[in-house]
Image 1: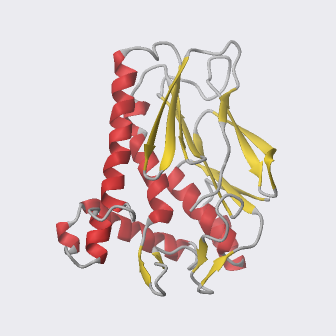
Image 2: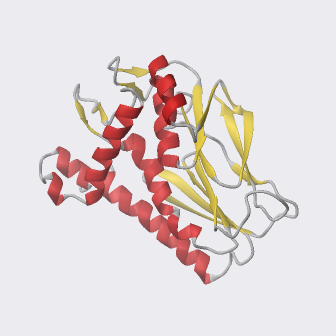
Length: 262
C-alpha cells in the first residue's frame, strides 16, 4: 500500500565492495544490496538466499493472487484459522494493534472489488516480511545491507559496523516528488533504518480510508522513517488517509518515527 520511496545509493568514499541480487517476489521486484569486505563469499550469498526464502514464505501465506495461499483459502472458508500458518494469526493481531494506534486510519479489512470487505493484511505484510527477511543479513560481519521492496527500503548492518564516522557505510535514499516522478524532492542518509512512502502517484486511488469507507485519490504522499519497515509502512498509509486524530496519535505513540508530507 505504499508509494515509491526511491532508490538507495552508497554515500561513502572510497566506496566499499558491493553486490546486488534481484528477485520477483510478493508481486514486485525486490532487490537486496550488500556492501563491505567479503560480499562475494559464500556466507553472504547463503544469507541472501535465506532472506528471499522468508519473502517467498510470506507470499505463500498472504498472497491475494494465489488461490493456494493460506489467506485466500481462509477467506473462502476452506480452512480454519488454526489450520493456517501461525503468521496469519499474528497478522490479525498486528492489524488490530495498528487500527488502535492509528485511531482507526489503518485497517486489514479492505474492499475486494465485489462490493464487500475481507481480511487483507497487504498493507502490513510487505514491511513485516522485509523486517523478517533482514535477520540473516544482520548476522553478516562487516557488511551493510539495503532491501528495496517496490520502493520501500530497509537499511541495516551487523552490529560491528558504526553508524557514523569514516568506517560507517551510509546509504543515500531519494524521495520522489509525487507531482513529478522524474524529480527527487529530498534525500535521506541512513546507516540503519526504514523508509516507506504512501501516496497515489504510482498506483492512483488504491489507499482505503476505513473511517470514510472510500478510496483516497488526492495527490501527494507521506514518507515515514524509523526503526522498522512494518511500522514505517503502516504509519505512512495511516497518515496519508487519516485525520488530525491520527496525526496526534503518531506524535504521541510513534516517537521513534518521523514523517514528511509532500
